[in-house]
Image (cartoon, rainbow, N blue to C red; front, side, top):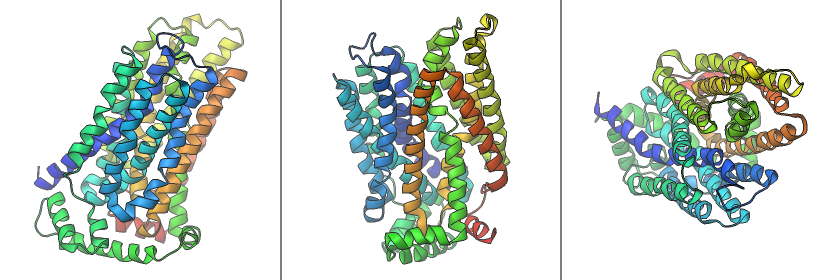
Length: 454
């Protein structure tokens, strides 16, 4: 293995610490919700529980605006270092809170940190890596979020909210201490006319002395980017609407982000303990939760391993129908149960098919969208695109979690699950019709393809 690959693995490893912390926040509610009104002294209502889950995603929306202000002034690296502040403070609030209001504040701060990470990290990894490693590094981001979720499941089910938070706060602190030694993006350095450091960054990251070709590509990207800095927000939005490749990139992003958020993963994972208890399967709820955590990590790891050979599009087309079948099966079980049919012999169905759903989701719909978003947007709209995508992620996830809580209480668990089944089927069709393959292509080649498609 050459030096360039080893160094990009090192970059990926260090960046993984901050991404894993996002997974800790994403998964925190699953082991914590059952503790409220029980072993945890904090007493909360079902509506407050929904907001404890949701306010993190509200924070993601707020945090997605921060890169628009910081990224082109202090760089991708500087913005990611700033991200550690709300992340560290959030764990302190979450662990030490004695009121629901303070937990709300902690969850919003957590979301702000995650929102910045989701917007900036794909861009940093996309600009620091070669086309050989961009796909694996991009898909690895979602896998690492899943590893964080599994870790918080594994420890959170057995320890207190305070102990959980004190262990988790080590992640952003460790990232801060290690990431400060890594290089800034060569694209940002070139834009600031620091060609020497930009060349050294490329030489170090790619593990070779002659980086003339790569530096020329960066210069072409920056030349376009410099033109964009003179554009007003109105002109930038006009660029998005009027240019065919930008419209196509946004269409692709909306389809993939809908697959990530509107297919029900957030509420299914957050409320899975209630799903298992309602089904009445003999296996313990804690064991079922650990199984889903392991499933999503294994599926994402398989995706990272084979994505270079299969491409991203094929994995999406395999994953979506697995999710459709799984959601429909669980919905049928709960509809039969609510209608008074004897389903006692099939209590295993929700646990088994939630795990199968998570395998499908973790194999494609979860890891691949973030990889695409780091690749498909031209430099003229990259920053506003990152902000808009993060806002869409936050709003759609918040809406889908609240939708689950309300419809589940009004009609039963089967109602939101049938809705997720229909949405996932629609996303599957849209992926087939509109999402191209980007694996193994340079950022320039991807833009040329988007421009040439009618």
